Length: 213
Length: 158
Image 1 (cartoon, rainbow over the protein chains, first blue to last red):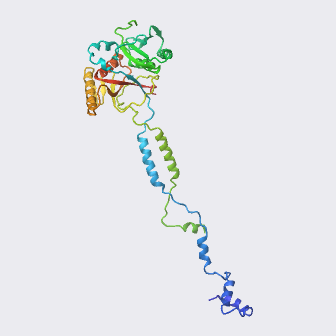
Image 2: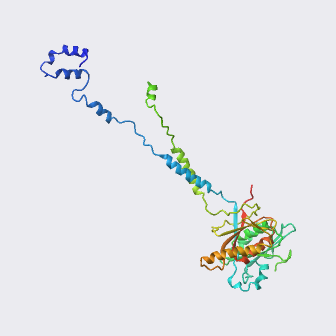
Image 3: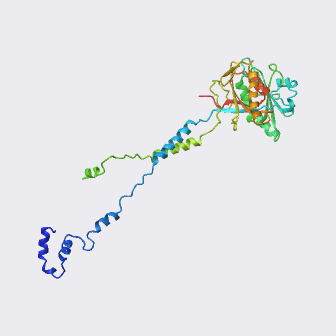
């Protein structure tokens, strides 16, 4: 069982070991092999299981989550709308219900005012008069009877007027030449709307340069 | 020795790319697009090429609603809506038809059809004459539409 070198070592110490019982040779052989005499067989597997290995990496399955994330990303990219350059000028042009039966009679009124509103509060209605040249370019602009150099000034004056009115609604009538370009007209309407005009009536000058009443 | 240690795990190798950074970026992108999403604020039917007027003073409108009618007023005085192109003579009839269709729909829901809730988006070319715009609005108003929106541009296109 034992290697020959171990047998020689055992023989040299045989006299000192007398009286150790029938298993003394096994005990000595194990001590010479450098193993502990108590649990020489069980210790190696026990050490192997208790040894703290490298920290185990728990593989979290990211791939399905990534699949879903890509689906969502595709959805949002496809429905993405970049910030629009377009604005809206909202016009409320209601048809007053009582005016409906006399719509035939009110026909003439719609020539001067687009909104069929029974009465116009003259004291509170501001008239903007816009005249155009043959090409449709804005030539002159009037707020009431006063000349206004440009549309920006018109907006400023309307804003000031709106503040003076306090709680009263600002009503504006735009009287423009038929040939005026929509570009200019839209700017005037937008200026009036930005100034806080509640209602904007759209009217037409019957003849160019008709004096404002 | 190091070579042997390297070959110890030989076999069908499972290469697992690290997807976590990729997922991070994707989630960032999703957040970005989610923040910027707008549903239904874009006015459709903008395919007809008209040069809209530029009016920076106009206020950004509120929710335009879903009941919309988009008309485009061309420089040759025609009205374009969907695939229809109408000359000025046909326009009052067209407005009346549109109003009738909508009234019938409202009456099916047993609601009073005194005024139409439809918002009419008017996309007019900037060279359009003011009288043409006004005529179209009047036609629409006579047919029963009461809410109009003039579509303008905030700034000139680059």
